Amino acid sequence: MSQIPQVADVLASFTTARNLLADFIESEGNMASVYQFAEKLAATLLSKNKILSCGNGGSMCDAMHFAEEFTGRFRDDRPSLSAIAISDPSYITCTANDYGYDDVYSRYVEGVGQKGDLLLGISTSGNSPNIIKAVSAAKKKGLYTVCLLGKDGGHLKDKADLSFIIPAKTSDRIQEIHIKIIHIAIELTEKIILSKDNYDSFRV
View 1 (tube, one colour):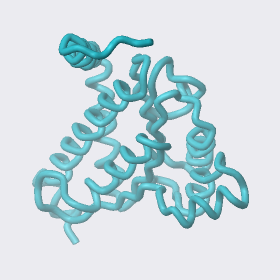
View 2: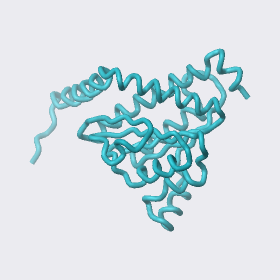
View 3: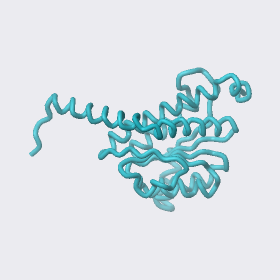
View 4: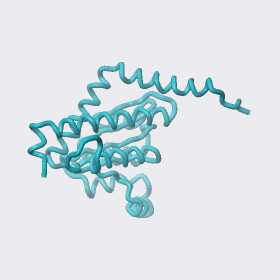
């Protein structure tokens, strides 16, 4: 039987989360990669292409959150930006029923994705079969691919054009860093698009 948690366990959890974030921040490569992610997002949108995102469970929630920050509003007023989370229940259940759950994201990419678009795939294990297939389908169609991963990166480690691997043991700690990457990439993307040189050409 496990012991009843104590106040010290709260501190231990926050300390683990803080240390994981500190380790991520200390890597200049990680900081450069987040900026590269934002630059690619901005370039995709400024060229009138779109962003697709997908994940499972909590990672689907992150994929949906990622997309709505573009189509809705993040920090500043600006035009709605083209981003779609692959999350329509009717589409997902139809495809899962007819082809299997492993195909739910790849078939959407095949049908909707176009050369010049960007796909964000999120998998805390790096081994989600439907994310693996989505990335493969995206690369075949000429989409730029980005993955948010965890642990050792799994089978997706070297599959995407740009990957972030969070070496934590549990999905919750991994997702906490994923959402920070998402928010900061969106923040930078918005600043790039709202810069004087870009905004006039982008405005509807």
